[in-house]
Length: 306
Image (cartoon, rainbow, N blue to C red; front, side):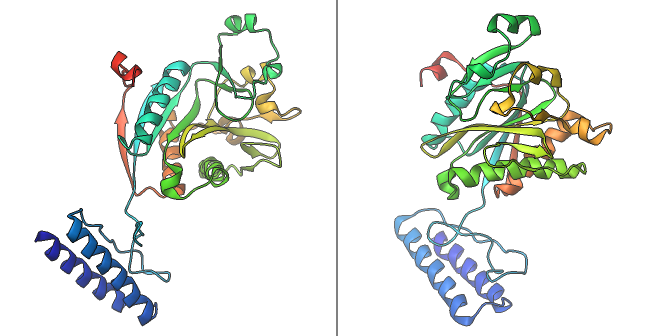
C-alpha cells in the first residue's frame, strides 16, 4: 500500500511543477498519464518506484529531470577507483574482471583512474613495425611491451600521464562507438581548456586530441557486447623522450606534447588534474553522482576463475 501513497505524492508534485512549465497542456497531461500508467504497472508487479526530479527551469521539459525506459530516465552514478600507479598487466586483468561483472549487472558503471610505469602497448592490428627500437632494447630504456585487444596503434603509457579506463554500458546510455569516442575526445579537450590550452580532435585518420600539430591525448578502446574497456591517456607531464622510440599511434611527422609544455606553468598536483579529468568525463557522459574509491583492489584466485 505504501506504493499508492508514494505515487500519489509524486503525481501531485508533478502537477504542481507542470503548472509553471512552458509546455502545452496536451504535453503536460500526456506526461502525467504516461507516468501514472507506469505507476500502476509498478504497483501490480510490486517493483520499486521510478522517481522524478526537477530540472532547471528551462527547455520544453523543465518540470522533469530525466527519463526512464517507460518514459523517464533515472539518475546515474559512476564508481571511480583512484588506483595510483598500477602495472599494466594488473590493470588489464582488473578491467577484464570488471567487464564480466558489468555484463552480468553485478556492478554499476565503473571508471579506473590511474597511471602506469613506462609501458608500450600495441593494439589488435599488431603494428610492431611502429616500434623503432629492438624489443631487446626495451629493458635498457626501462619500459615493457604488451599486446592488447584494443583498437588503435602503438602508444606509450608512463608516469605523469593521466589514464582513464571506463567500464561502462553504452547500450544503457544509447551510445554508439563513434559517439563514445567523441565524448572521450571532448573530455580531454575540456580538461586542456581549464588551463587555457586550445585542443581539438585530430583530422581524418588522426585519433586522439591535438594542440595544433602536437598530440596531447590518446584514445584506444575496446567494446564487447556494449561494455567498454581500455580508454584514454592525457599527457600531464610525462617524459616525452619515450615517444621517440615509437611512431605514436602510427602517425608520422607529428609531435607529442604535454599540458606542462603547452602552458609553461607550474601545474597543480597531479591528483588534482586527474580528478578534474574524471569530472570532465562524468559531465560529458551525464553522470549525476560520483562514488570515489581509493587503493588498488586485490584479485583473488577465485576472481580469476570467474
